[in-house]
Image (cartoon, rainbow, N blue to C red; front, side, top):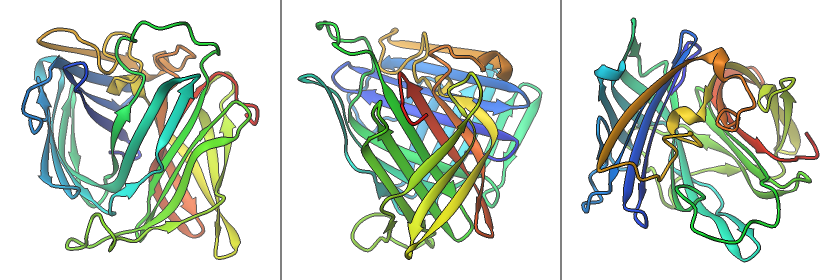
Length: 325
């Protein structure tokens, strides 16, 4: 969820092959990034989507979710409700091999929506008005390089990844853009689509949902000097035979370590104990580095598309070479 003043992220992962469930809730507000983390043994009941103080309730499948965080001792509490604005959009399958070994084999859906509820932080209480707090939800399945790696021969090549993910909310329709590219800038997974805003009784999945797929969408990133994150970006869509440009201007930056991604302690899929809970807080400028735990980011973006303005995020993960950049 995101406004021009704050950003929050909730993550929950289940790892059947590892017997682990973990979760995180992170917030950027007033110059601070704060997070609470939880990890434990995976319950036998797959409908128990809770670990420690963090829970995600499926109120209406692909329609309404309730997120609760009860970690006042760590300075964070929340009770939030997400309502979908679009139907679920299936991204293309994302498959990456290293020699004969699968590194990624992932399927993901995405939805855009709005949040209501409240977040309590040290010295601040954020009230979320459903009409003004846009958000994004995604759900993925499959193989990912998380948790302790299985013993194997060293990789023949150095790590390389270039990933952009941009869901953007506008009043009348929404935009979704995603690309994975190799070191030469060739996309090995890519999608772009315009998604209509749906009413309360509209279908959220299946053949009766609509998405306008955009072929040949391109991106232009203006990289911040010395950092692997943007200081602005543009997406170009070829729509109805003519190009349309969506300008993205950054407002806030969230380091994805705050949701567990590549965190030095609370990275996804690791076994800690039957139940372990922790927290961290950082001044935002402390995280403005090339430390590997800080290069994966989501930036809140003010979006301009023709005469319309909207709000979304631009997720960026760039490790290793990328020729066009």
